[in-house]
Length: 184
Image 1 (cartoon, rainbow, N blue to C red):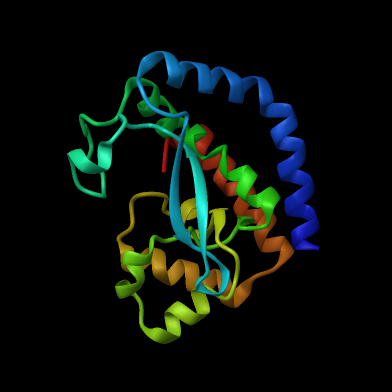
Image 2 (tube, rainbow, N blue to C red):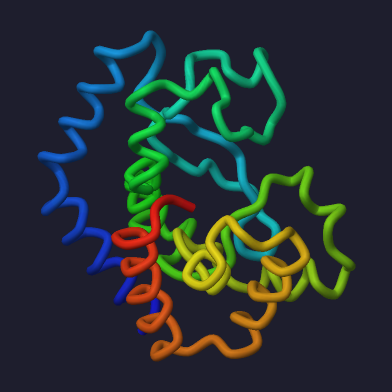
């Protein structure tokens, strides 16, 4: 049921949001050189790698110009990118990942492989037994406020309590967070 829900919601969302996706793409192209999308290898279900899509929010070649993590006021973030991050619109291309089956609408956020060292083997196995999500319990409740340990605990709590009802609650809370509290 979860996969059917993910597929239908992502397909309908992509169709309805297509005009906005085109406008965002055009704004990215006009503002700075480089591609429209940022593509990065992430950890998927059962720790299999997949290519995750986001709208590019930084200057081309940003990874060669600074650290992996961005700080507030990072000069590599473009003006369009700052808006996309603030509104979480940079995440829209992940609907393609959901449509493809690499991700779900709700699940633990997909890590990069370098973050593997943040987990015990048991935590890693539990976290990767489900598909990663565009949003999750951590994003819906603490967003970018909590530390890595709190996010990990919430991701594992989600896996322990996964249900369609919990997914709907997380989607509702995420929309509320994005609309009323700002970006991730």
